[in-house]
Image 1 (cartoon, rainbow, N blue to C red):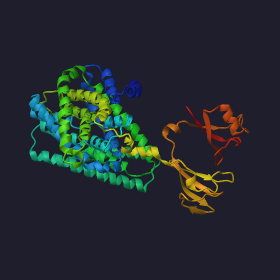
Image 2 (cartoon, rainbow, N blue to C red; image 1 turned 180 degrees about the horizontal axis):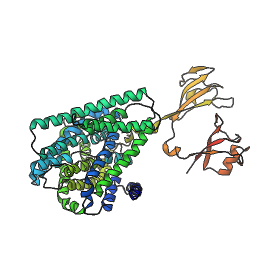
Image 3 (cartoon, rainbow, N blue to C red; image 1 turned 180 degrees about the vertical axis):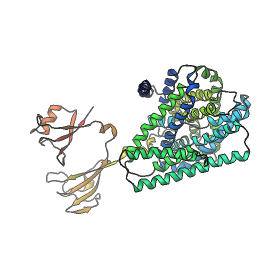
Image 4 (cartoon, rainbow, N blue to C red; image 1 turned 120 degrees about the vertical axis):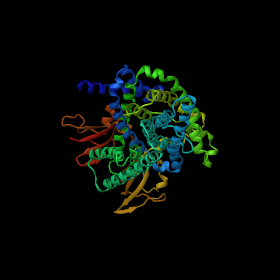
Length: 538
């Protein structure tokens, strides 16, 4: 156990290091995680021994990726394109699976059921890679394209999973058409119903109970797990991934206590889950099998990229009038159809499903190679493709597509009292020429509350409530606290002395003295037990 834990820790360190390298060389970091797993698992026997365990581990990790995929979706931004995005995530998956299945059957000579199984497994697009690339390159895209890609890639895994389960059931033995129809119905309807029910209960609990910090994170973990597990009960037989995504998108667009900490927690948790999935998938692969799967994988990849994906996207978007004059947008959406972790996790099911017979091809290895090629080629060239299709909008911030961006633009409030020396005395507000990021929100004058306007005149003694954007995370990390001990050389000296001693690399922005917070000036004198808030400049 000790050796395992040490190895696991070093693997995470390596992945963090590789993530930094990936950002520098411009390739998706998830590709390097796969290659690291492939390198450390470079044997012929490891895959057979741990395939079931890895499949279960990856399925659990995928729960949190699906949950956060919904949780991070900004519904206000996504609402204008929810119809086409939803069609791409459902009908688009069916079309992609069908077209790829036909290619495998008629083009490659595969058996019919196995051909459509391949189409089902590879029919979803990867949300993790798409989100990572859009954010890393801050790709602002025209015509609400980023929300389309976000909703589609975040929500099409449940449909791909459902098709995979149906095809695996067919390959296991005899099943009637009515049973197939009922399976599809139960997967979609009961999965969605469970998701809505769990989300409703979670919101009720959050509104009626203020969970202590730390316990709220455990609550969200439990909700995500329940959202997946409940629909998978035998007597319900719903789609757990669909339920998880719905719960995520509902809770992600609901206000609740300590929201900022929850966002950061799941951001880190999801990153760890992505590392685990891609590393483990690389670890269990047989190098010889990958080599044997190379030719069919390359053929299927180029068929999906050049034919199946454009056909599916074009069939869905062209009936909308607004897209008929935006063929470049259809071209970019077609190109950004990356295959990822979910497809490989679903492919593991072809190796672990009991009683499965009749497979003549190594679906898992073929899908693995397709994902590698997709991440390397498509992922690396998305910025160039966006530029080639003239779809980059420099005035659009792609981060607005995600709910956690609001955490970076929180508003902070402060109070300023106008004393007799203030240059603002007897001036009207519009004469102050304040930056647009700063707003005088309220004036308190002799216990009277005044809503300020441009022509409001300020007076000595006014208390001004000022609002502005909060410090961002990078700035907060440069703020340090320093408490003056009994022996401190600064006791009895002024801010000017401190600034002269330390130079321009530091600035004292606040002094905490007992229960009082003092905004210092050059003549402020330090006292024993003062706590200095120091802003350090790099």
